[in-house]
Length: 416
Image (cartoon, rainbow, N blue to C red; front, top):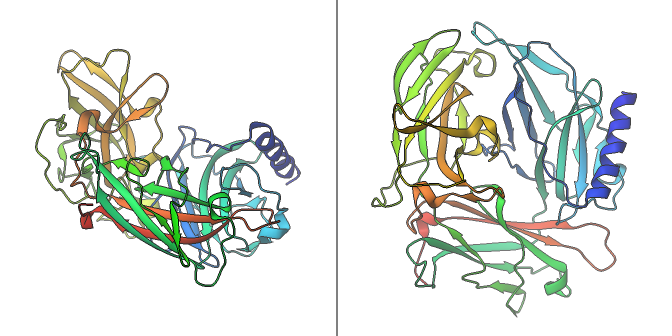
């Protein structure tokens, strides 16, 4: 515990030194991190004060190690807030994750850890705002971290999705327009004190954060931007479903068994220059499931999934990667596709826990920027989820509250 507390202090110092905090990706032996609120299957939980938070992950090293968690509060721009832990946490953290189970009847041995908040030690979060939960090992080393948000229901947020007014991108982009209605709370100096976060498919890496209200009507703040609030439409996600690990099903072409089960997916092709086709998806998310298991958490197999993409354009010094919420939209070595001359395709093999997964292929530049439409294309018709969060810091306040949330889906997109 002393090591953990010391590490927490070091983390705080590091945050102060580096200003904005970034999420720490998990090491290879930590897999299938599921982080969600009551219902949403997402890696970015947005919960209301008093609601439950759930985090689970698998450790594939079979060591039954001890892991601890630390919760920190942050401002809108992910710099540390001025609140002490006792001001935003009822109870305490820096304690061991007590609930874990070992895998049952699986070829890959793993331990499944799960954490719920509130719990006996951390009885609740008392302030809204941005949060980071960090998972530490027994020696106090940071294993991985994830961001989440806690909101209050004070203002109403009406969100509309529109086609872009820019003729250059009218077939490719979707614009988010919204109105904030605050009948009970007077929003003083809103251009300075009110900030908004606009998300597409719960992906913080593509969020829009710099919008100011254009004008005010009564108790309403109006945001009617076009270019400034637009996202690339993208395309519907590709998917595979290996809930029956022994049989080829949705997206799976071939099944093999070596040390672990191996699933070979059908070879994908570029969709950029092909007509848009609606295909139901879950907007990049995933669901762990095994139809032959009673307890999905410990009986779902780990399977080597083989991806293949035929893409004939010259990518220069850029890279092709698979992309999705299965690893919190992270680009790393496990997502990199390498060209195979024998099959004239780009290939990668990666370990996935049994279930239904969304993914897409993206082009990544050397500076780390991700082009989601280079392979899949961008279409204004694409179905996407959008979320708008409203932050407010009153005069003299020491932290940014999240006072409202609005959501919309582009299936209801309209012309301006």
